Image 1 (tube, each protein chain N blue to C red):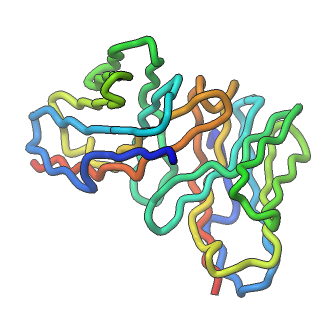
Image 2 (image 1 turned 120 degrees about the vertical axis):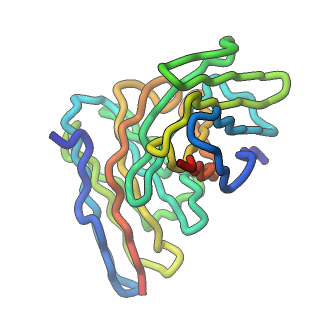
Length: 114
Length: 110
C-alpha cells in the first residue's frame, strides 16, 4: 500500500488557469505538508497543516491555498497559474512536527505551466 | 539570511569505499538535522535525524555527525554499493521551520 499518494503525477496547463493537486496519506498521521522543488532542485516547504493549525510559509503567494477535507487528505489549489509555478510539488506527512519526526513524502506532481 | 551548503553537486566514489558528504550552514541554529535520500523522479526518503545535543548517530552502514560549533554535519556511507547512488539532502529544522540543502548527487562506481 502506498503511504502517501498524489494525483496527478503530471500536470500540464496554460498560464492563468486554476488547478488542484490531491494528496492522501494512509499512515494515520496528524500533520501534512506541501513542498515545492524548483528546477534548481531546492526543496522548500510551503505549508504544514494539522487538524488544529495551518502554518503558511510567508513567501508563498496567496494564489496557493491548501484545503483539508479530513485528516488523511490535503489538497493544493493554485489559482491564476504563472510560468514560475512550474516545479515538482511534493506532499508529505508525519505524526508530529516537521522538526522532530520522520516525514514520508509522496511521489511528486510535476507541474508545467505553458 | 539562512544558508545551507552541501559540499559538491556531484561526488564519485569507488564501490566499497566510504562516501562522505558535507552539510554546512550559516545564520541558523537548528535543533535537529535530518538527512534524506532522493532518487530521480521520486520523493525524498528519510534516513536519519540527529539532535543538536547529539554528536553522532548510526544506522546500519550510515553515520551522521553534527558539530554545532563548526556548523557542520557529515554523512558517511561505509562499504558503499552502486545501489547507494542517489541525491542526498540535508535539512535543518527548529520548531515549525525546516530548510533543505540543494543536495549532493552521489555516484558509486562499480
